[in-house]
Amino acid sequence: MAPHATHNLLSQEEGALRARALRVIPGGMWGHMNVARLPAGYPQFFRNARGCRLWDVAGAEYVDMMCGYGPIVLGYGDPDVEAAAAAQRDRADLMTGPSEALVELAELVVETIPHADWALFAKNGTDAMTACVTIARAGTQRRKVLVAKGSYHGAAPWCTPSLAGVTAEDRAHIVHYEYNDIASLERAADEAGNDLAAVLVTAFRHDVKRPQEAPTLAFAQAMRRICDATGAALVLDDVRAGFRINIGGSWEPYGVRPDLCGWSKAIANGHPLAAVTGNDRFREAAQQVYVTGSFWCAAVPMAAAVATIRKLRATDAIATMEAMGRRLREGLEQQARTYDLPLRQTGPVQMPLIMFDGDPDFALGHRFVLEALQRGVYLHPWHNMFLSSAHQAADIDRVLEATDGAMKDISRSFDRRQLAKAAP
Ligand SMILES: *Cc1c(COP(=O)(O)O)cnc(C)c1O
Image (cartoon, rainbow, N blue to C red; front, side):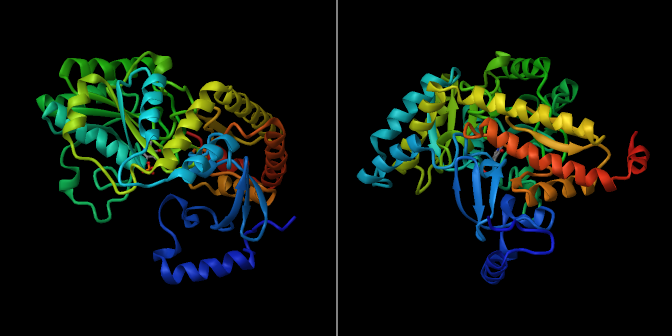
C-alpha cells in the first residue's frame, strides 16, 4: 500500500498538483473542500473512490468518513444508481426540455415525503434554500426571514458565512434567533411583525466547530405555532440531514411538518441535484417565481435520484447507517475511557461530530485526526461526518483500529492539567 500523507511529507503527486493549482486557481482551492481549513497533512486531491473507500493521487487508501461532505449515502459508485444513470445517459442527459425522469422523480418525491404536494428541482442546496425564501416571500407578500445564528443555508450573499463581498442590503431582511431558544424565536418573530415571510431552520443544529444539538420538540412545535399564527412559511433546511435520518424528512419523527423544504446532498448519491418540496399553500407562489438554471433539467441526475430514493426505501440503508454509527460511537467511547481522553460525540450517530472538551483551538482534535489519517482513516476535526450504507462492520472496526492507535498516541503527551484549567 502507498504511504499516507504525513505532516511533513505530502506525496510528490499531491505537491505537484498543488503547485499547478496555485498558479491557476485562487488560493489553490475554494470553499469547504479547501484543505487549508484542515491541519497540514491532509491530501487535497483524490483519484478514485468505491464504497466507503477513497484513494488519494499517490494511491494511499482511506476509509472515508465524510462521504463527499454528505452526498454519498449508498457508497461511492453504487451499482444500482450507476446503472440507472448509465441507462439514462445512453438515451440523453441535457436536452432542450426535461426527460420523463423529471415527472417520475417528482411523483416519487411527493409519494415519499409526507408534507410534499409538489416538488421542483435545482442543482445545489443554495439554489433550493434561496428558492424556498423567494417562494415564501412571493406567497406571503412579505420580506422578513428568520434565520438561526450560525446555521448554514448556503453560499449566496443572503446566507454565506463569510461577509467578504456581502452588502448590508443583501442581509436587510434577515432576523436572527438562537437555535432551540423559543424566547429568542418569539422575539425575532415580534421584531419582524406583520412583515414575516419565513422561518428557516436546519434539521438539527449542525453548525461547524460546536457540539451538535437536536431540536427540542417544544422548539419545533413553537416554530409551527408561530408560522400558523402569522401565516409565515416554516422552511426546513434538510439539505444536509435529508435521506439519512428519516426517508420522509428529518422532522417526521417530531410530527412537525414544514411548508417548504430544501434538499440536496444525498438525494442522488453524488449526482448533482437539489429539490424544493412544498405544500399546496405555496403551490401558486412556486408557480409565479422564476427559478431556473442551464443544467437544472439534466436527466442523468434525476434518473440517479429515482434510483437512490427507491433503494433507500426498499432497503434498510438508513437503519444500517444508524447501526454502524452506533458501533462507531460506542467503540470511540470505550477508547476514550481507556485512554482517559475528554472525547465529546454529538449529533445523530449516522452524522457524527467528534471533538474534545477543553480544546477550543482544536490542538488535540487536529493531532487526533492526523494520527487517524496516517492510519488510513479520513476524519474531520470540526465538521460533522457522514456514514453511508456502504460502511459495514469491518469498515467501522478498521476505523476503530486507527482511532485506538491515534488516541493511544495523543494520550501519551496530552497534558491533563491544561484541560483542568480550561474546564469551567
Ligand atoms: C450544504 C448545505 C447547504 C448548501 O448546499 P450546497 O449544495 O452546498 O449549495 C445548505 N444548507 C445546509 C444545511 C447544508 O448543509
